[in-house]
Image (cartoon, rainbow, N blue to C red):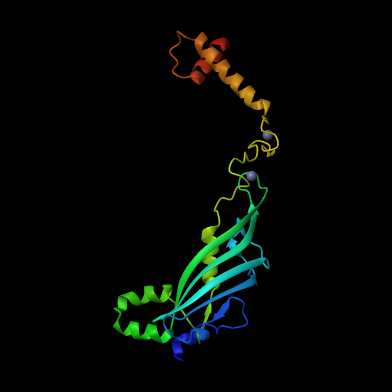
Length: 221
Ligand SMILES: [Zn+2]
Ligand SMILES: [Zn+2]
């Protein structure tokens, strides 16, 4: 093994998100299907918004295909995500299904490519490329990306959720006619201003508030 690959901690085959590709035998064209149910790792989802609770069941179906440069992994994840409606703060539960596909390259295949590749491409390639380690790969980063992409950034309990009253926080779904008299008072005040302005018709004031002020000044004099 090359020194550079030792930077990562070694993959542990007992980790439920680590998969073994040895059965494919490094024969391009060989294929293997497998399914696994795992306990959700911590923080799977959008932090503070919606996600799969730690320890909740996560169903994985994978197809591993041996290709020249590595193993192509195509799969589906199914799980239940829970969060909070962004409008009314009620609990939201979503059945989540997400597809993903990722290439895991043989480290030595990459070395061959690297000799030919232009130096400028190297940094980008290294960031994007996932590698097999001793025939094992870690699905966790792929799973996390797939789950996050499949979840709503702004989950709602239902599309027409009315949310909460901005003044008192009452739930409007239970009481759609909820309102405050203060709104009526403000409206009445506005109507009053309009009337005042009407009374000051021959006054030169441009706006309603100017009209009110000059009217008040007149009364003082
Ligand atoms: Zn809601
Ligand atoms: Zn209210």
